[in-house]
Image (cartoon, rainbow, N blue to C red; front, side, top):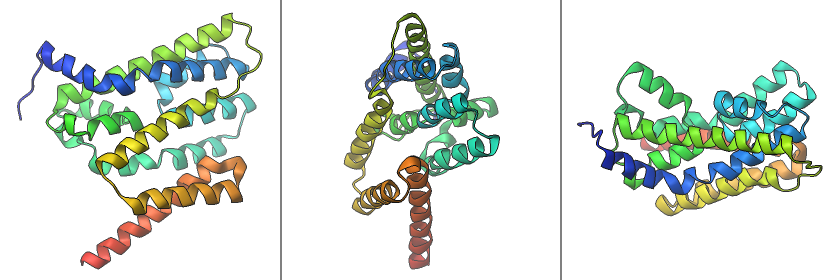
Length: 231
């Protein structure tokens, strides 16, 4: 499959990426505000955005860093929250990315949003250049939004922040709805809702971590059952 480095192709990638990518600006700003509100220097916002680059984990990491959480707790949280990327890798078109460095970067920047764009019908023929262009654009928008939010949070006397930490959740809801429309799977949707509800009842203070862990276990069990059924 040949590469298409033309400006027209880059514009097409930007058009497909824009609906999700532009949402990174206000979301990144929300992260920047939360970083400053937690008592950290504003420049930690773009650092978190560039180095960690895992939206939900970054919002959790703000609180963990501000409270000086133990390294073991940070490692466990990171593992559980980002374990969903293992399932992303099963269907993300990494096989169309050529070159070791390109694949390493594509793997590193495999965010929820990059996955949503990468497996969309519009990206079905993308190869190395379009896929990397999409991921670079998303990361740049995320880091830019976080830097703007951190700088504004440092300059403006904001004493109370309410609802900003829900911004990323709102984006995930939109992504989930769009993914369900492309590939309707009631069992997966119901399983996710049940895991979230159970985590909210059992451990409301650790809802995200517990829900991810339970949903991961459900997906693994479903995979094993389906494989035995097909054998």
